[in-house]
Each structure stands twice: as C-alpha cells, then as structure tokens.
Image (cartoon, rainbow, N blue to C red):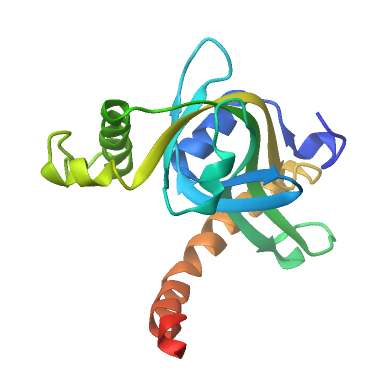
Length: 211
C-alpha cells in the first residue's frame, strides 16, 4: 500500500471497498498500450471467488479501447463514491477548508472474453442488480433484442489483483468533528444534485448541434 494518502485516509476493510463499488458500480476503466492511455466509463458487476473477486462487464465493439481488452492484459479501475467540500464553519475546532471523498482503486487482469450466452447472463444479472429492491423492469435472457445486442458488444471478466481504498473522511479530527463532516458529506452531496442535473439537461450542447 502506498504512503499517500496518509494511513488514516486509507481504508483497510475490503468489505467497505466492495460495498462502495456495489453502491456506485460505474467504473473508470483505464488501460495503456504503447504509451497510449484509453479510458471508458462502464458499469461492472462484482463476483466473489477464491481471491479478491472478479468483475464482469461489456464494452462497445466500436470503442477503440477494445483492442486493449485482451486476456492477460492489465487494467486499472476507479470507482467514485460521494465527495464534498468541507467548510471549516461546521467544525467545533479551528480548521482549514478541505475536500472529503470515498474512492476505490483496483488493479486487475483480463481473464477472458465471454461467449454470447455468458454475456446475456451477465447483462440479465447487471440489470437485476441495478434495478435494486423495486425491480420495475426485468430483462429476459430470451428477449429478441438481446440477439442483436450481443453482436455489438464484447463481454469480459476481470480478475482483481490488488486494491486501495482512498477514504478521506476527516479521520484526523476530533470524533465530534468527524460526525459533523459525515453529515456535511451526506447533505452537500445530495443537495447539489437536483439543480445540477436540471441545469445540465437544460444547457447540454452536443457536438452534433454545433454543426
């Protein structure tokens, strides 16, 4: 484990790392080939095995990163939990402004590509997981649209080889100030979402609209 961030900001509980990537399953997949890095955002499913576990996902066949996704290739993954500016005004002791966050960094190795049947099963499981407790939609493996879907994407499995949890939660502060920082992280993160999402939907400009 690296010395940065300092030890009190590094998560030692693997279960907490897994809970983070299960709660926030959209990963940043990073690969490098011939000194050229490529990055893709995609949701992944965590599966328990005899080691640290593995991740299942799929990537569009038109994505140039696919050429990096070959058995044996090394990959880096970042999962982003909540983050927020923490104002000194919330503390009971004098402090400087800071930013708190929850991040999980994984190193992994591509195990294999999935066949069409495995890809369909993984897509059904991913959909079930993302639908959550309400399950408003159920994806059927035999849905005719799935036959077309498997021709446009490549499914893959990643073996997790190492992990780091970057959990900056004001752990170096008094317990009562840690609690205040926790409340600020929860409230600040949720408070900005409605206005931000509404604004982006209203103001978003696509490249096609600029032509």
